[in-house]
Length: 255
Image (tube, rainbow, N blue to C red; front, side):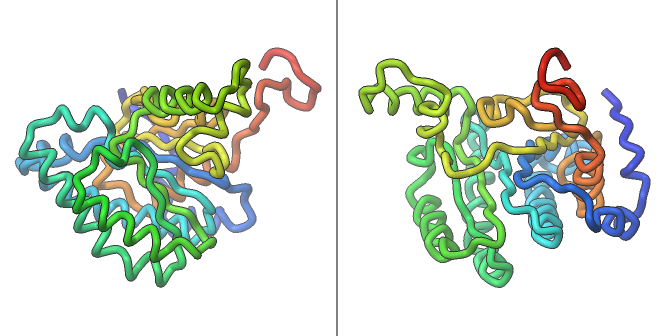
């Protein structure tokens, strides 16, 4: 489906200027989709698409850091990704490991804290080791928190949270109790969810946390997603009215 986003027609410089003084989200979450299609359109292997996607990750992180977004969560590897062909899974895991090693200096320089959520015990031991090292090295930073969702599924997160609720002996859990046992209970809920490649679904991502998130969908395939596209999404967000179920200017009722 073709999505029209007129703001993406502006230059990066114009968008960046318009963001000055704008109301920006505290937490941005991104479903990074389209690596495979990007590669197929160019006659490349899917692996080449994932490699190009890593470059887009760097650009998105840099753009968010420059405009002082406090939290950025990226859907890096879903629980369903394990079902892909073995060669592709192995390539994705290698890219992840290389990223964790290669980006350490950049994260330290920009004072970005790295975290990860998901069933991390399913990741290979060598990847876990590099992940733990980068997480520990950046733990003291508070300028921005970059979270990678790895071996992640929204339903799995809720199941894991409910198991912890039961184990804690909470007989009548409320929303606060469930939230307390999510993978990152100290993170604010995402204000903005970005989905690339024009797909109109949330793909089992942060199902509890995105209940009130504004959604921005772009036709751009993830490897082509640049700082300009991030700025366009942020500017679009800044122009929306967030009502959280209330009538505009009222005390409540139907939206």
